[in-house]
Amino acid sequence: MKTLVYGSLNIDSTFALDHIVQGGETQASFGLTKAAGGKGANQCAAIAKALGKDQVFMAGKAGRDGAFILENLSSFGVDVSNVALCEEGTGQAIIQLDRNGQNSIILFGGGNQLNTTDEMDSVLSKFSADDVLVMNAEINNLDYLFSKAVEKGMKVWVNPSPITDALLALPLEKASVLVLNEIEGAVLSGLDAGCSFEEILKALVAKYPRTEIVLTAGENGAYYGYGSTMEHVGACKTKVVDTTGAGDTFLGYFLASRIGGKDVKQSLRIASKAASIAVSRPGAMDAIPFAVEII
Ligand code: RIB
Image (cartoon, rainbow, N blue to C red; front, top):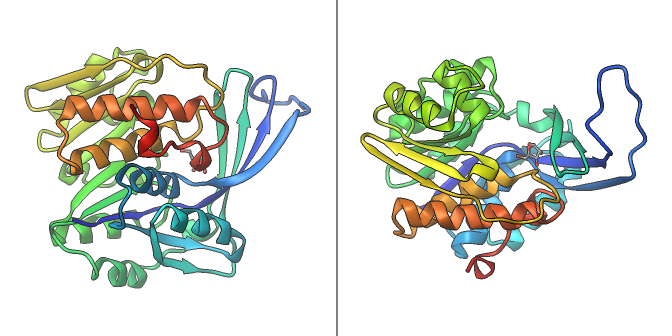
């Protein structure tokens, strides 16, 4: 079984701040780092680091300035031959990181918004019904990618982030697995953001009866729902340095654990541990642990 991540690659510029900048406020940052990121690339890195074998493929589009992201992914064993190059440059993420490790992110699409349907057809032609597609909403032509992969019978894992009109237009009831946080869960379920995790989970399970739901809940751990099966694991305690990419790490480790034959509860625990390590380190892709670090 091969795993294809068709998604975003970003250069993350992270500004360390006392607090997230308010409207009209100017604030001096006390640190600036540039590193590899993008939800797609992070998720791909997490799957490859977790699996530790060569069955993970990244597809998308980046500029020459993003060559270091591809080098990083290759070093984890990812096949990056399906990442197209463009002159317009790699996607950019401006990340504000506060003293509590919480963030606020501004995206500029760059290559992420330039994927063509011909490229998608060409990439998907190399995969079959036995394979998994992971996608999020940071790239264009989402509807085309989703429907073609479903048509082929691929198992489609969707991280519905960020919530966009294009994302909301997808027939998500055809996804195999949805991995999302409570904000995304509240929007998709139609509930208020103030609802409990359990209420959001139940509403999503009822709305998407043929889709496994994985709801990440930060310091409250993670929830799983499918039919009458509900699971919950608590979060591993850690000192939070940077939450950027925690959800991507969780998704990658949960998927790799399921592919590796672990049951849902074990997979939630492993993913939770991986995410707790990721948030204890700075950065997104660089912070994702290797499998040997998960005990
Ligand atoms: O999920 C974290 C990622 O979101 C960052 O790496 C940033 O690039 C944005 O895509």
